Image (cartoon, rainbow, N blue to C red; front, side, top):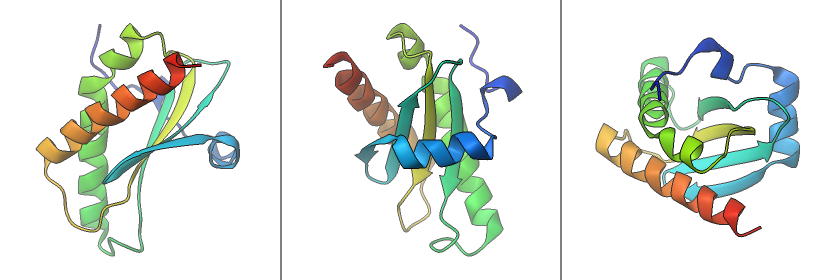
Length: 121
């Protein structure tokens, strides 16, 4: 499996994002939160960092890069468990600047919780 995060996989449509926040279900592994819904198209993923908690754009962009990289390297968990038709929004809800190890570990925890929750249905 290619470990890429290409244009087709990015969540950009405002209508889809609004629907995700309105109808989506949530899973949390502090400092990350995952909001997801089942869709009819291939997996779409977006990341977000609060402007209220991180005033400087440099810090928000850095955290977004860490989130996208952790997702890119760990998305094989989702493919292996047949979670292809989902839309995700990954939110950073912490208050301090994270390091990559923390983000990577919590991303794995989030995906494990998601797999347990979807397989329990």
